[in-house]
Amino acid sequence: MITEVIELNKENIKNKIYTIRGQKVMLDFQLAEIYGYTTKAFNQQVQRNIDKFDDDFRFQLTIEEYHFLRSQFVTLEIQGRGKYSKYLPYAFTESGIYMLMTVLKGDLAVK
Image 1 (cartoon, rainbow, N blue to C red):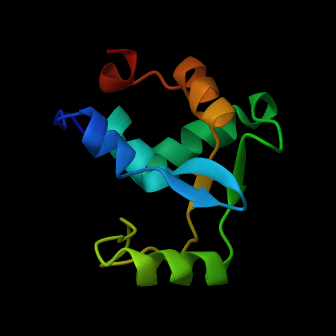
Image 2 (image 1 turned 180 degrees about the horizontal axis):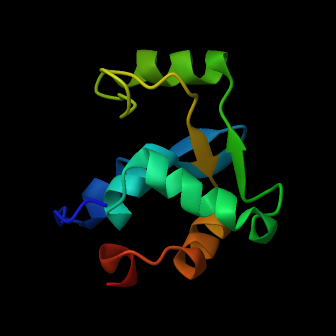
């Protein structure tokens, strides 16, 4: 668990919203940071509650989508092993983000 509080403001959140497959989404590693989790712990919490996440709540990026995002946003880095994770990130739709609020139990997530 991460205990450091990041400053959330409209611009900070807006910069973490991407349009992928015609949907506005946020990526798992950025949501993990907001909610005070490591990406691995965040995704483990989701997996433990996967029955609550309908297919339209989240999806995993393809390698092409990930490379396109990285080419568009130089600062987009996946947290994990070394500089980049060996796993492709998950994208959470608005419904998926609402569902996260019911399954995440960390201190920052509750706040």
